[in-house]
Length: 493
Image 1: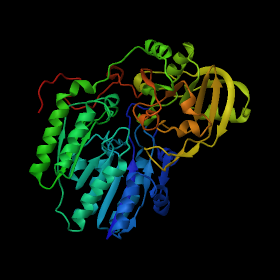
Image 2: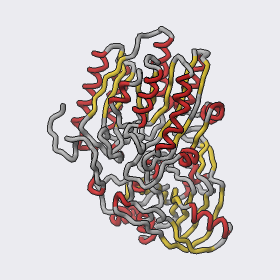
Image 3: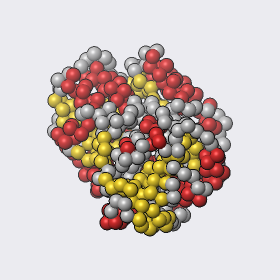
Image 4: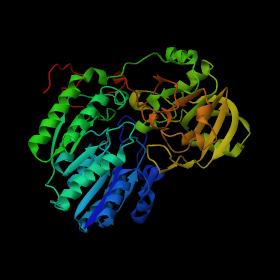
């Protein structure tokens, strides 16, 4: 048996000013052939699982490309074509099955449905090829995706600590069919008229907690697979929003489960919306909180893990203004500031215009750096291996990195965008996060993978940025109608 495995992942924030070109994929991780196998074989990511399953059955493996970029703006047509071509060429050369690790929210300059378009192109080459796909919980599922694969599944955790589990489930479904051990899988899906917000999609919280439990219950009762996608609200496209998909042994089984879970999601639509609070008041509340251990402060509107520029300084400025002490910040993206600190050297005292390098025209915000005087504490190459539960075993490349110390605050400054979901963002530069009073993280929910066990209290700070959860700041033009919460819908379907 010959299997084509591949990864092509990007979460596209159509409001983000960040250009997602080939260089952005290269900065996070772009591998071909044996280099891709070496990079992922020992990780808990879907490719690592696919490789394991292939070894179990003695299959020949072709892994033409493993590509991922940190979320940002639309993927350029050149990058998309360059990354799809190796996959299409491998399928064209012939294979018995295809196992793909995709995201589900890729928008390019030429298509709003990067995954569906790729799958359609694969099907055009090999119309009967068995295809399985693993997708992110924030997938904006489309009819094209469903039509052009045989088994589709999504993560059940946010933060995404079950990538290996769901990949194994869908991989075994497809390989069981290929080996004649089970029939052809059948899928059913529902697209809800609901644009839910990412801050309300943590799977330890309601409503997602109950919906994920419903998926687990359906699987325990014999359904091969059930998935609820929160969707990605920062993509201004027709298919953005919440959906459910199931895999059954027959359509009636799959369709009944999909309908049941979708109805449960719709009944809880009101709690899929985040309610904002005043930034000054929330920081003051955090300052007044007594805790024996780190207090986590979330600068969620500038989360590069959802396409944020990671250089907005408004929340940091407010924390400094209110005089919070013993704060570690992870992290500010500012390659220019890193170069200045490298030139000055460790121990140097200097004044920096930190952050504020990127205008955000989609939300009518101009770049505003923060002028700070402090000391260069640490300089590193920014590389470290994830030891926590998300992306375990993967080598993170933050690029040249420095720590700037000012007014009771240590700021990790990076050259490549990186969301702090693992404590390595601090320990790799000599900061012990467990010893800090405050950890200010440019993250939304993924921080929980590495930091939730440390946090004695957590405050969500509503700052400025293109990953805002305030719909009034986003000029949507392409969403389908009717769609909650923009349209008041009482009944569905």
